[in-house]
Picture 1 (spheres, helix red, strand yellow):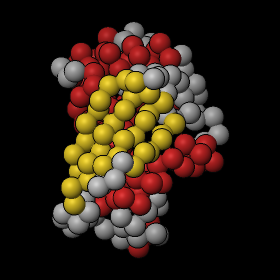
Picture 2 (cartoon, rainbow, N blue to C red):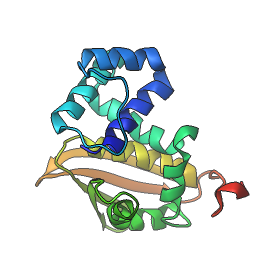
Picture 3 (cartoon, rainbow, N blue to C red):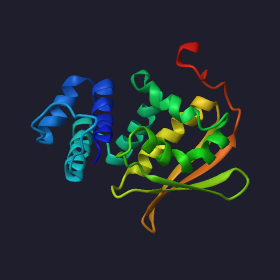
Picture 4 (cartoon, rainbow, N blue to C red):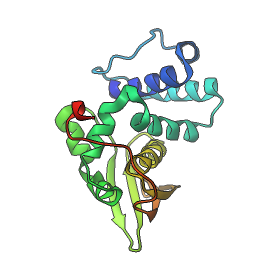
Length: 195
C-alpha cells in the first residue's frame, strides 16, 4: 500500500485523537516505527494491521472509522490540499459526482505510483446514483462514503448515502441527492491565497 494512504490513517488518528492514541496504535500493530513515509510503499498486510489496531484503540467499528477517515480527508484544515483538488471536479455536487471517474487518473498525474480505487458512477435518474468502488483492499467504499458526505456539505448539498456492501468485486455506494442547494456551501476560490 502506498505510504500516502498509510499516512492518511496516521494523520487522522493523530489530528483527531492525539499523538498518544497514535502511539497506542503503533504499539498494538507492532509497527516498530512511529511515522509512515508518504512516498514509500508498505505491505498491504501492514496497512490492514494498522487499520485493525486503530479500530480497537479508538473503540470504533472498522467501517465507521474508515468513513470518519474519508470525512477527515475533506474537512480537516491539515489536509486542505485534497479538498481543493476535489473541488476542481465541478461547480456543484452533481458535477463533482460526474468527475469522480477521472479522479484516479488525476491522482496518478500528481503521484504516479499512487493507486486509489477505480470509481464508476452510474446515474439511474431522479437524482439517484450508484458508485462502484473497485480496489484490492476492502473498505475503501466506506472511506468514499465519508468523503462524499463531507463534499456534499462542502457544496451545500443534501444527500443520503448508503454503503450496500460488495458485489462483483466492487463496493457499491448508493447516492440520493435530495437537494443541490440545501445550505450555503464552504467558500472556494481557484487560488489558495484568495480566501
